[in-house]
Length: 294
Figure 1 (cartoon, rainbow, N blue to C red):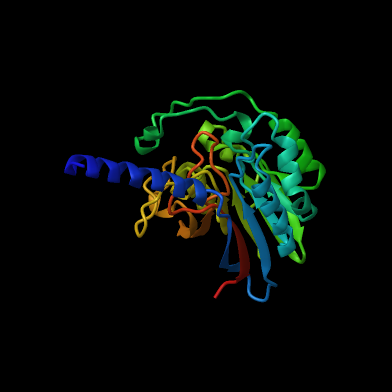
Figure 2 (figure 1 turned 120 degrees about the vertical axis):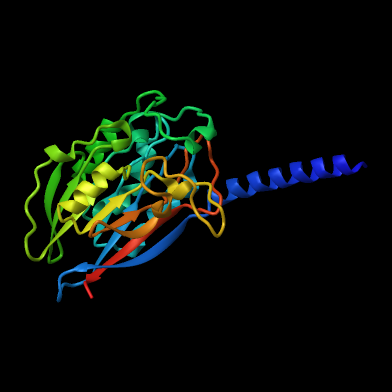
């Protein structure tokens, strides 16, 4: 075999192996644990489970079973930052997966993929500046999902606020609808001035800076977001190349300080069915333990 053919065969084999690994990694669900010093002195710790970007289809039994088992963590509070659906018939699957977690107090917002089904897109688009153009699939039954969450007691924070009490901790929660679809109306959401002893949280799907920075400047203590998939295809030792919004790639996942607030971005548990791969960025949920400030 000629040298050229050997090099070509090697390149094809490496590409095939890389794709196979990326498909495998997309099913390697893991739980990340983070401690956040955000409560007042003397407050009891709170355990918050952050879920995002399940992108469920009815056939994803393994992912659903893994999510159900998270109830064994017995979190004090659940935050769901959207993109639960990826199929017109996925609402029953999403409710079945989340059913035991709906027994705990929680809040939620919607993401673009709760509203519209997946469509094939050129992956190279994600490496280019966002032009603002959007390609929509078929509308999804998001209202059924919304109604199911609300009926089980989760607070809807889509351009809304809620005053909650979890154990002995008062929580002032404010959220927006999906900023990726320009549905966010943070300025119109009623929210109170900071009060002593009250934890202020912000919840949004896509962490666009206009939302995150506005929440931080209003004195929000902890902001939850998803959408980025942690970059989805990352470079080992370097991290994410893109966030699919204007958040810096260095903050594509995990806990970061921003404008005096803590920002937690979940890398999420799924992918679009049209791009079912991850590389150096396994799917995740996060258990955050909130403790008093140092």
